[in-house]
Image (cartoon, rainbow, N blue to C red):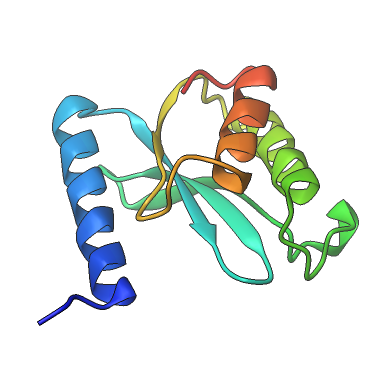
Length: 119
């Protein structure tokens, strides 16, 4: 029986997250979620269970509501780097979830690195 796209996505997400947890114990996690219409990112402290900072195209002041393109991902990456600095965070590990590291996800990561966040 063939696996569905959703099942493969969920397996990939767990594989990526578990591998990253073993390697990057104690660091904050920069978690990305991409839907058909929006892209969002959170900076999560898994030890305390707290979100330190977040950014999304759903925020009206970014000007990309309902858009999920490379420009929007770049802007969200720059904003999360700025908010991470305000929260006192300099480094985190990049959790792409089940998404492949190209296109919008890669643009977001590159913009966060350019903004000064070490991932």
